[in-house]
Amino acid sequence: MSRFEYDEEAGQRLHMDVVHEMDDLADSGSNWVDAMRRLNAIDDPLARRLLALHRDCGSGSGECDCGDDEPGERQGWGCETTALIASHFGVDY
Ligand SMILES: [Zn+2]
Image 1 (cartoon, rainbow, N blue to C red):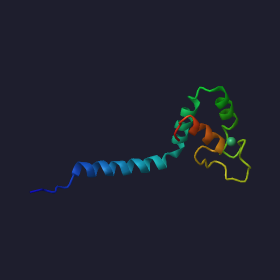
Image 2 (cartoon, protein in one colour):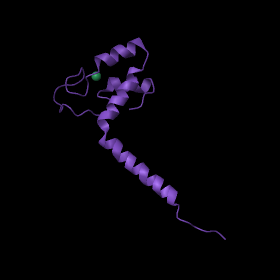
Image 3 (cartoon, rainbow, N blue to C red):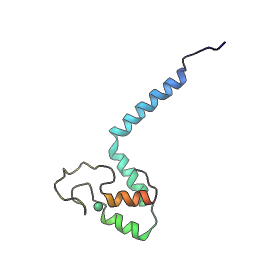
């Protein structure tokens, strides 16, 4: 004979996970800072020079920004070059 019980602990865990996800979304500014910190840990001379060149991308004044985009709204890594370097070195945003 089997019993079914509501797993209260799992339910609470799930609820906390959902809340955590929403916090992450609201806090995307510091996510970018954390991501940049991880990028800065890359110890490859060429990658570091490219990253320095593309540091302002996505902010409206970077190497890859054409000026038509709304400044101040960063989307992900800012540009494809930065995203490529990040994925090559296994850096998550
Ligand atoms: Zn760029």
